[in-house]
Image (cartoon, rainbow, N blue to C red; front, side, top):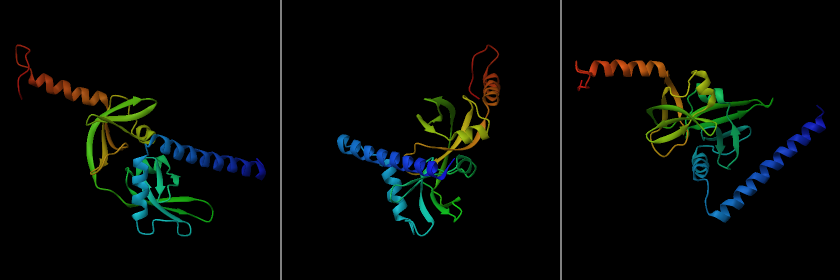
Amino acid sequence: MSDDQLLQIQELIESAASSLKTANTLLRSITGISDTDRERHMTRAGSMVGGSVSGKVVEGIFDGQNMVDSSGNTYPVPANYASKSKLMEGDGMKLTITDEGKFIYKQIAPVKRRTVVGVLIQEDGQYKVLAEGKAFRVLLASVTFYRAEVGDQVTILLPEEGDARWGAVDAVIPKHLSEAAARTTVSRAQSDDGELKPL
């Protein structure tokens, strides 16, 4: 691929990103509905020490998939890194862009976490964990790393405060193990006449 083609592709991507940003702004002005999660992340990123670009260092907030800086720019966070590090929506991050163009992410301000147990489901082509009456999105990299399947019990991490759309997978209990434990509990709770009794 020639340099001209690469430049043309880069210009097309920048143009598309600019068009999407303009369309999003126009949509917000017409409907009055804004992306409050994104604005919350931008505000928090701006309040971080050195929250703007300083040379080749950018600080921002993890939104569940990407890092958002105080200007609203998004930077893709590798899913394997986010999964392995158990990054959670709201975590403060620092991105260092090396002279070679390499992106190096570091978690610098983790939010307080709480643990929730739910069931892995697949909805609209996305893996989610159904817990507390809500479906929390999870990274595909986490699902594949733990070899989780729909129906498995999944422990996820959520922010202690605020409302989250994303959860970080902490552990997986395969469906066959949780079903076996449930059968054992039920069989111990049955009386001689087949009725359930309190344990």
